[in-house]
Length: 128
Image 1: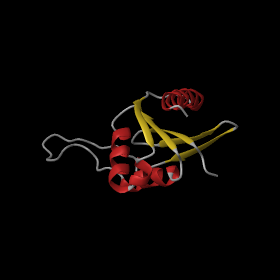
Image 2: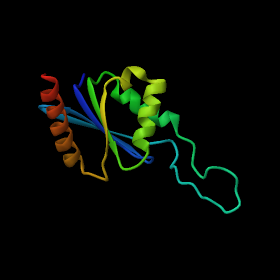
Image 3: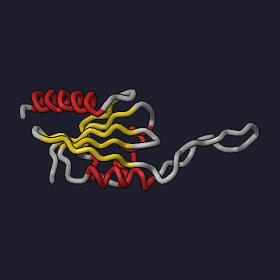
């Protein structure tokens, strides 16, 4: 089924993708291959950050393929990393991203309500 709207809540441990249609909501959860927990030890050389899981972001991009309008949300940097990944590796999906917003840990119902309000406002602004 082709969906018009999708909202993605993403952090480094999971991506919740909600496909929103007037009569239906479809939910998908995408997990990285490994938990990104990193132990930082004193005296070690390096940034202290785990490398980004490109397979994780590719899986999110595949889920969003064919969606007309996408809103990306999340509490930290993962939302920006996802968008950067989309721009570099999945530009056909990136061009459908309308916005990127910070969001703590909303429930699915809160996420859907916010996304519906967001897309309705965007449609009114664009005259759709």
